[in-house]
Amino acid sequence: MKSKKIIKLFIYIIILTFMFSYIMEKSGYYEYNLQTKKNLTEEEIKKFEQDVKEGRDVDITDYLKDNTTDYSNNLTRATSKLSINLNEYLNKAISNTFDILGRLIK
Image (cartoon, rainbow, N blue to C red; front, side, top):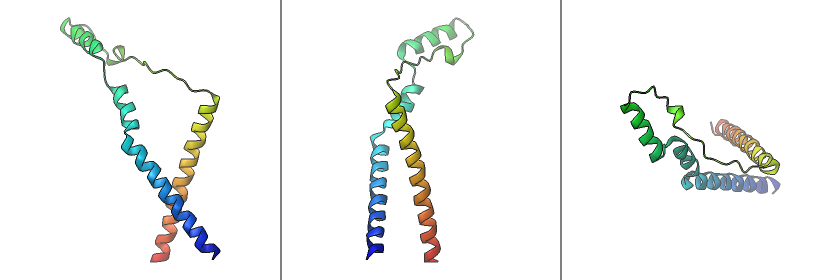
């Protein structure tokens, strides 16, 4: 009886983890952050093109501006670190569990 409850709890945890990961992936938040870091603004593109026309020595880092503001504090950094560590632990736990289940099936 107790083992059935543990198995159900484990399955619920796997399903919730999957749903959370799926929602984060579909929201596009990570890709959006990467895209904004990569893109140059129109003004920077025009300045770059002008410098190329004038034959100046150009370096792409001169045209990239980091406009992000860091709003983090000790609490957000701590919770972020906790979240990352928990994610790593869950990934290892799920991977090990499937390895064990794979061995049991063989």
